[in-house]
Amino acid sequence: MSKKLGKLSEISEEKIRNFHEYTRLQGLKTTKQRGTILDVFFRMKGHISVEELYDIVKTVNPRIGYATVYRTLHLLVDSGQVEERRFGDGMSRYEGHSEVERHGHMICEECGQILEFFNEELETLQIKLADELEFDIHYHRHELFGSCMDKSSCAKRRKKNPKLK
Ligand SMILES: [Zn+2]
Ligand SMILES: [Zn+2]
Image (cartoon, rainbow, N blue to C red; front, top):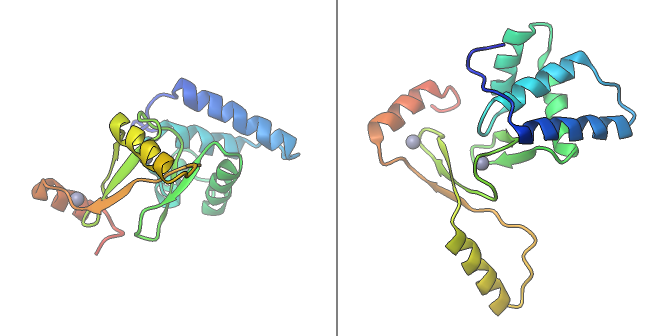
């Protein structure tokens, strides 16, 4: 297993079990390749693109193809264990677990860094605002676009991000 990868959290282990239950109910066979992709995905943190996942998966098992990684991610989304997000650069990112529950995102338009935040007051305030408008919130999305204040770190990240020109 690659050194970059962390341990599986309890939440991740539960999500993997839920996923296997989902594929079983769908009549899909469990495959070793899919198991590897799941294991890598849930050890990676943050907001992961298909390309990023594939880059690590192929170091673990070079026989796993891009299409299998892509299909497995979509199956994970269908199973409800993973969320697909798009942050304006047109690239889909997948989020399996986070340290921060119900969080919002601040996205740097220059280097692509994605920060997470959660604020109880903000949550309470929007419920209050919705109440005033007699509106029932089903879900919400906080996505704030801007740029990093630390320009030198931002420039370094920008250089490392091949998606940005
Ligand atoms: Zn997030
Ligand atoms: Zn930045």
